[in-house]
Image (cartoon, rainbow, N blue to C red; front, side):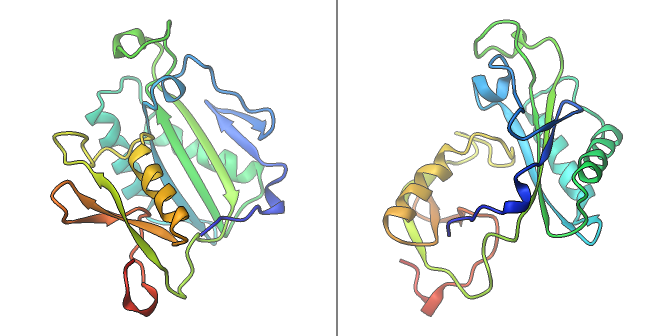
Length: 208
């Protein structure tokens, strides 16, 4: 399903390493690992009536992903919680909000892949938007993608990273097929998981 633009998001303030800036003026260094290599981890959070759903579990997964990638200088939970609150308060948000919380390996002193050229600690980005859930309860049509979800010995799926090329390729297939989303199999042809992270109802009980 194609997400729609929400006019209430026109003047959002986003949080870049603790600095609140207008969405049109936000900038990330081209030396940041998220830009250089997609080397970042993230969580999608939902705000309902002033409370973030399962916040502790999300922060635990974020930290676990960062640990598996051996990040150094990850902001502690207290700092992230304070910055989440600042961002929501600045945008006067209390309900019906989606938050993307991202932590990257940080800024490199020169471009390249080697994590040893990261010496300044992690970067973090908080984007909070007025946004309804992408999928409603009316049911979905899924397309079984030809692209395959790799096993852990290729790419550890316990790392919730910004490397989403597999999912993007599958989504392109689903879009071309006119489906709402993609169903991914593993490299042995067994069901891996849906492209999105929800349990779906498939219209007419058919997976295409």
